[in-house]
Amino acid sequence: MTAGKPDADLSALAKGGRQNFFGFLLRLLARLPFLFIAGRLYGPDALGRFASALVVVELVALVCAMGEKRGLAQRLAEGEDSHPANLVYDGMLLALLFSGLAATFFWFVPAPLFPSGEYTELDRFIVLAIPAYALTEIVLAAQAYKYDIATTVRARAVVEPWTISIMAGVFYFVPALSESGLAMAYLASIYAGLATGLWSFFRSYGPPRGWRPHPVYMGKMTVRALPLATADAIEWGTRRVDIFILGLFAAPAAVGVYYIAQQVASLPQKLKTSFEPILGPVITKNLKTKNYEAIAKQICQVGFWIVAMQAGIALALGVPGEAVMGLVGPEFVGGTGALAFLLIAEVVAATAVVSEAVLVYVARVRNLWISIGTIALQAALTVVLIEAMVRGGYGEPFKAAAAAIALMLALGTASLVKAVMLSKILGHTINTFRWPLLWAVAPAVLVGWLATQLPEWAELIIGVPAILAVYGFIIWTRGFGPEDRVLFRRNLDKDEPKRI
Image (cartoon, rainbow, N blue to C red):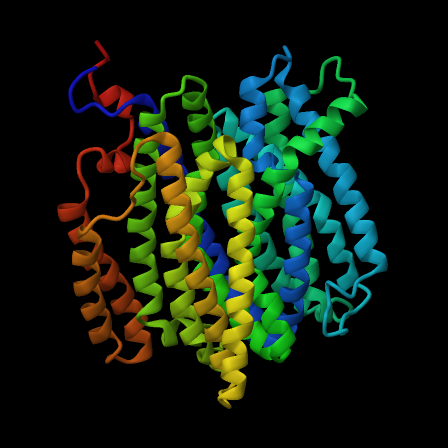
C-alpha cells in the first residue's frame, strides 16, 4: 500500500460522514424554523405536552424496530439467502407486528403518552407514528448497508424536518387543528420520511422473491434481537428519560423550555449519528476477518472526528446560549443553564456511542447491562438533583439544569466504562481525546465571551461565526493530521495512486 494512503474503510467512513455532515447542516437549517414556530406560536405549555408524548412514541417505535438499525448489517453480512431483500422484509414484518400492537395499546390507554391528562382526540393519533418510525429505521439501515447514505440525508435532514416545520405553521392557522398542530405536524413528517426511504429501498432491493416468513425463524430472530433492541432503546432513552422525570416534578411549561434546550443541544448530537449508518457495514466486515486492530483504529479516528466537530458546535451554541434560547421566545431564556450542560453531555457521550458501535456485535449482553446501568444511574441522579433543587427552594430553571447535569454525569461514566471494556476485547486502546481539543477550546471561549458583550443580534451574527472560525482554525492546524483531513477530501480514489 502506498505510504500515507488511507485505507478503503477509512475512505468509506469519511465519505459517509461527509454526506451526513451535509445532512446535519440541512437539518440545522430546517430545525430552526420549527423551534421558532413551536416556541412563538404554540408556547411552552403545548410544547411540554407534545414532548411528553414524543418520548413514549419514539422509544416504543425504536424497540419495535427490533435492533435492526444496527443489527440488520450483521444479518445481511451473514445471510445465506440468495435474495438479501427477503432478510430485510423479515425485519419489516416483525417490526410491523410489534408496532401495530403497541399503537393499538396506546390508542386505548393514552395515559403514558399524556401524564398531565391534557390532550385532544386528535393528539391520540400520534400513536400512528410508531409503525412508520420503526419501518423507517429499517429501510434506512438497509440502504446504509449498500453505502447509500444519501437516502438517510434526504429523509432525516430534508424531508422530515422541513415537513414538521411547514406543517406546524400551517396547522396553527387551521381552527380545527390548532390545538393539536404539533402532533399532527410530527405525524406528517414521519410518514413523509418513510415514503422517502421506501422509494429508494424498492429501487435498490426490489420486491421479495420467494419470500415465505417462518414463525420459528421469526421467533429466533426476535430472541436474538432483544439485547440489541433494548440497548438501542436505552441509548435513545438516556436522551429522553430526563424529560419524563422532569414532567413528574415540574410544570408543563418547564418541560417545554427544557425540550427546546434539548432540541438545540441535539443538533451537535446529529454529528454523531452522521457516522452510524456507515460504521455498521465497515465494522461487520472487519469482524468477519477478525481485524481488531483496524476496528480500534477506525473507532478512535471516527470518535475524534465526532468529538472535534461536536465541541465546536457546542461552543458556538453554548457560549451565546441566552441569545440562542431567546430566539425561540423570551420565556425560554431560563433554559440557558440546562442548554450548557446538555451540550457538554453530547460531547462526553461520543466515546460511548462509537464504542457501542462495536460492542453491540462482540459483547451485546454486557453492553446491554452497561446501558441499563447508565440509564438507571441517570434516573437516580435526576431525581436526587431535582429533589435537592426543590428542597433548596430553587425555581423551575434550576430543576431543568439538574436534569441536564444528571445526563452529563451518566453519559460520561458510560463513555469511560464502554471504552475500557472495548479496549480489553480488541486488545487495543480506545481513546478519542487529543490535547489540541483544549488548545482550541480556550481561545474560542474567550472570543465567545467578548461576543456576549455585544448586542444580542450582533452576538449571534458575529459571535457564532467568530467562535467557529477560531476553534476550526486551531483544530485544523494543530489537531488534524493527514488521516483526519480525509474527512474533508472528495474524489479520494481519483486523487491518490492505486494500491501496489
